[in-house]
Image 1 (cartoon, rainbow, N blue to C red):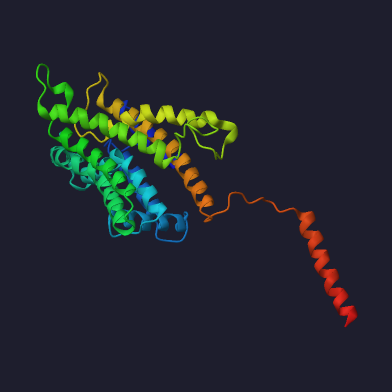
Image 2: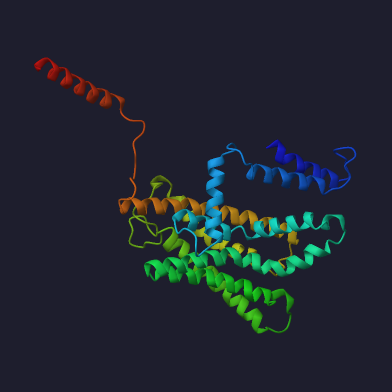
Length: 326
């Protein structure tokens, strides 16, 4: 953790006019150092630093990025959904690579990457949604289950939000008139958010069962004693979904907050929302597998040693009896 914290502290100190390392004047050295450290850990070629986990992540990411030709397992769908929450991260990664490789950090204005990213931002916002859309269409092609078409429509709505935002459908740019791009952006924004929230609750989580013994949840819950958590997720996911839609809107929305602060807030909110979504999503998938006899609901560990020892003694005595008879 000290390796990661030092570049942040050094960068902040440099902004305050302090010289942490004598002889290093450029402020950009510290974020570049952090970027190199992270890349070195992620792409470390030897079998250490959780090599099996990193290799599995690389394979899953590759499978998602080549959709619809990749694998169609739960892991691929799950990572694909997570990537839709990392639009800002993917854009920042692309901007960082451009910023340091083109030498833009040596210029005060940084005109090269700024002009390039203004064009690429809608593309980066659409890519994770496009990957999930292709996965859903491929799954429908193989199974012919119409539910996958409904899921594909969800990601299509998200892409429409990006499209009409790119056509300057941003509300604060107009004072007296409502152009059609602004109207379509607002309609897509609301419909997409409500559609995705409804899908989260009823399909991804399996909640919203009015006749359940656990009102508006479901009969089977892993955390029976903590039902408040499910209700918290239902409420918070609805509110935080609107923040997520803001993150995929290429045109910044003016809410009276500095853009850098707004980006930090929306990113934090989306991380929180995606974490709670992932917990209940995995729980629902596990219970579904149990109902379909593809997994067991509970394995008691550790085993009862007394029972095991008693059965072992019985087997030994049986063998001894057989040997005595013979």
